[in-house]
Image (cartoon, rainbow, N blue to C red; front, side, top):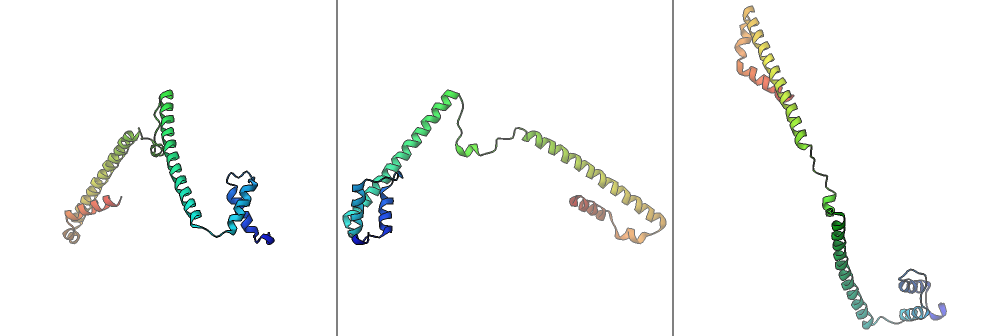
Length: 166
């Protein structure tokens, strides 16, 4: 290699570029031509040929992509016809199925909340009854100082505060 002014990395690079099928075999003539090209300066014609090849490959890949999409659609239609089913798009497959029990669940939750509200209303009525009983007891004992500062609005605000805290 040193006698022809080639480095090992250049030889390996030519081999890798020519071994596109990854079979491990490269035609001898192609390998020699590739090694000779590494010794020549890059020419404008080589660059133009590379660009042209790249454009052709891009166009071919786009055509291949469109053809594969048509093939996929056609196969999907055939499967739907044979099996009598509907194939869902990928986005719809990942979505959770609609919950058939959601209305029953919502009704059950509403029933539970109604029962809780009824219990809270009963507690508020009991508190108001206890407060009124205490006020009567204080009146009988003659402790009117407390009764003058507390009024019925305070009782309602106290009850609603406890309601919102639960």
